[in-house]
Image (cartoon, rainbow, N blue to C red; front, top):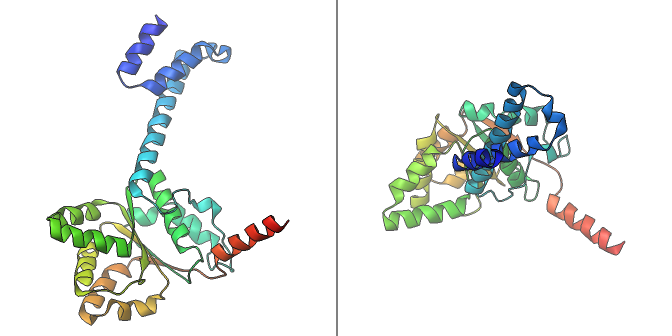
Length: 251
């Protein structure tokens, strides 16, 4: 009887529920529960399994540079220029639901990429789809898409994703084609999706970086309005990690 039930559950692709049902048969503490209570536990087991599987898939598809990043591990306080209350607010992901952007600036090594990936990870946890790209790499993809005829398809994919993380904004010089492609990507997302940008350049220098004044105005109009701006400070996390490793080795 039990074997037949387990086979049917697995045939219906309810493997987690089947495993939980089998575990109940060998757990004396469960035997005294009502039918409704036991059924609720079984449904919860299947639901949790599917949620975890979906989260794993979303994180994998996002291709985060730091996939293990999480907001709980962030260093906050004056030294980093990051207020804990701001992190708590961003952790709710209301900014995603309201289609706001997040702009993260700071010197190299202060944790911009980690924070961006932590925000993306949190969005994945709450069911949002994410794509992470270093901006120079995205330009390479867009250039190839122009050549092989997949440009429109790539733009549509970037437009649909709930959160687009653009890392290393301002790291490499822009061509006219880059400016055009960047405007296309951001225009498709304006007011309908959220974009996270990290940059070593202060926001005041972004207009000059973008070059063409007309295009720069159009791009920044789509980025800066409805945005949360975070300016990280403090020493390089990489240097601090290297110093700790060195001291550990000497000890």
